[in-house]
Image (cartoon, rainbow, N blue to C red):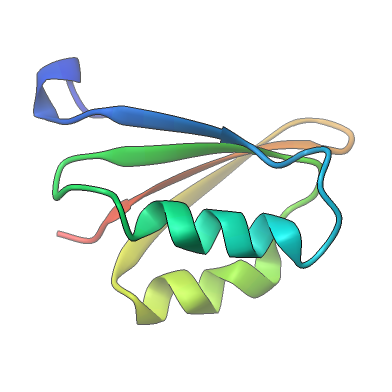
Length: 79
């Protein structure tokens, strides 16, 4: 992962929101990211429909399943 000096980390928890609100909030948050920033999202499911939107907008993403119904998605601008 990035060194702390390379950009800021923005945390967003959408695990209590119902669709489509998680996608709306995530897409709003990524537009504010700087070139070296990353968005770390806590989600209750893997947001597969979001991936095409992120790819089309030039964002890379990584998903980690932490537990049943608990995922951590890290998003950053593609290099």
